[in-house]
Length: 126
Image (cartoon, rainbow, N blue to C red; front, top):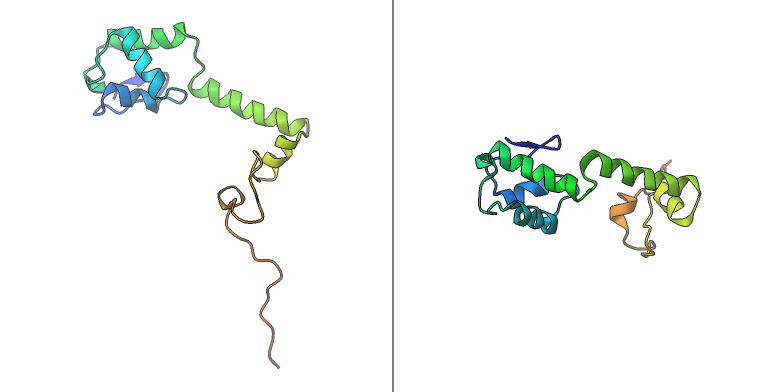
């Protein structure tokens, strides 16, 4: 399995799809990387030479794209900043509610989690 930026990309997949396993690289960036390096998108990841891996790495650093750990760290720090300043979005994140104006009286189950029934107890029969 080839390693790029600390991520083991799947060897059997074509390079265009294998690059997407790196956090921060999607279909558009993967195609751009391959066009700039001159690597065919049909080549399997296991067939890449060390020189081609270095070219891919060089293109990512040349464009100064934030990927993997740095990108994850940046996103979590953004959320922590919103929560720290107690803005509306930060409060919604803290309460695990939808952030972008969706309704919550019905739906929003993905964000809120499974229903928690309140106040329903079995009555004792005497």
